[in-house]
Length: 575
Image (cartoon, rainbow, N blue to C red; front, side, top):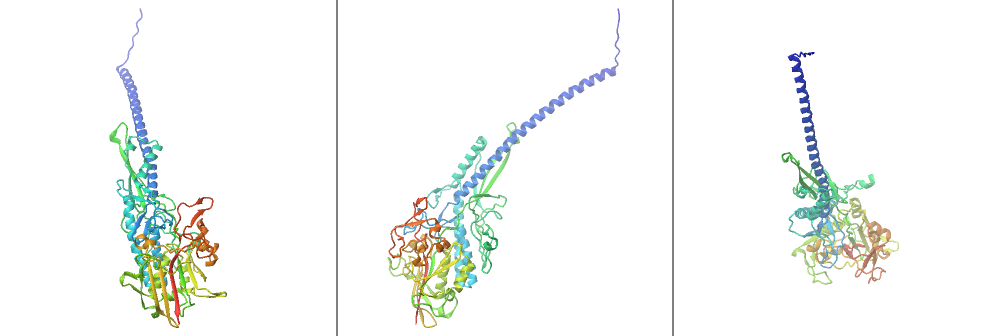
């Protein structure tokens, strides 16, 4: 029998026990580490999915802001002073907006109103005409009031619980919040985020302005005497929104609008302050981002996007200023500036009349004194007429061209083929003044429209050889359907709708192109022959066609194709 003995020390046993303990600890550490990594990965994926969903819903917020801004640009309201106003200009072609005479009315943008007042102030300062400066300030004050009213209605239109009904120029009902919310939900569904969380997200819309961002479609004029920016840099510079353009002691701010609705930065968004014009739409929402395992790890992400509305460029056809000299030139009065300059021979008070119950003399009784007691001097009357004519061009005026025409262009010039009785001043799409002289007049210059201005005086002012008889008509002094009478303060159309194309009135294709009228509008006039026997088309019953697109369903205002008469001065010296 053989015996084996194993002699192990206590120390050896302890070492083995320690090794076993270490192996167990490593397994525990590995297990715990694995669990921790899995949990971290889970939470990271879980929260990442939530954040990704929130980011995806941000595109829905941007789409909602753009949709609301697009709708907002179509809202039209009726202003008692200016007529129909909005964020965007619209030509006088809409079926829904008509004067008492049944003719379509234009929609004037708030930017055009502000910029027009500034242009008028610019010209009035250059001419040193205090009355024109006063009229520019009056129009600016009314434009500011109208901007505040428009801002109030736009803010209401963005409300979820809006009770007012708003329409565009064609009578379509405008619901910015409903449209924006539908786009918001639809975009979320398109991103596959129509889950229980996204369904609980509430869309909020508000109106404001964003200094330092956005654009306008309104050209910025240069002060008289400077070469236009467009000629120096071959580009057009527009006003910047929410920036002040002070002039004549007044502040001028414009609203942010662009050729199409577009996103703008959100950092400088500010709520209405009564000074800037608010047009920016801010859409916002709050999206919960939570863990499926731990509700206490939930968080909320606030999302917002801002968009500016779209706006069309000004499209209204300017009126004409007609000077009629039946007996030839007037002694000591060679230019328009001679008529509006401060001089003692034009300082006699004259009665200013206004038809109240229809056009005179066609329908109304003799016109009554303006306001009951209104009188103006000849100089004041001519200044009012010049101002009102320029206003028909809105923000599209070249100040240098106007000042040159007023100061330097003679009212009467003898021609080689005889005297030309009529001198017509027209404003082109480039803002320049175009002057034609002829022996024929396309307008009925003896009629004055309801609620507009009229003056007749056989001794209006003294001339170098006697006294001057004056017949003055201003068809555009009061604007809009409320104050402007049955014709809404629109230039009076000619009985011949296409007179701008006819050589009888010194018209031709080149002049029509410069004025942005006639075929330049992309229209062909059709209808019966005019009663004026000028080979033109009668305004009554005329219709229009677009080449290759057929007849227009809605005919524009009768003065849209060629232009209408804004102001007429008939002067005859009694020697």
